Each structure stands twice: as structure tokens, then as C-alpha cells.
Length: 65
Image (cartoon, rainbow, N blue to C red; front, side, top):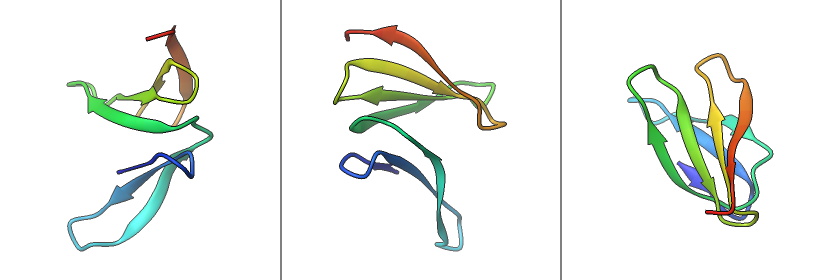
């Protein structure tokens, strides 16, 4: 779940527990996973696409979408 104004991505368990999965984003609003479990985040505030690995490493893939 993206928190566009808080700059975080939350994880929601099947039991309903919510925790912060990743932070430091600039207006995250679009999320997608690939088959390897990598999370891709579209950042509305700066036009970047970020990748978050299952281990939590964050990198920028693209500028200006």
C-alpha cells in the first residue's frame, strides 16, 4: 500500500497487521511486483521509478516518466 503523502510503502499481512516496508519515496502512487519479488514504485513527486529488492535495497531505474 503506497502512502503518497507520507513517502512510504506499507506491507499488510493476511491477518491485517500493517508495517512500513520501505520509505524515502517522493509521492509514491503506483506499485508493481515482478516474478522475482522486486517491487517497482512510481514516484509522482520527482518522476522516478524506484526498485525495491526483496532484501530491501532501493535503487532508481528511471527519471522523468
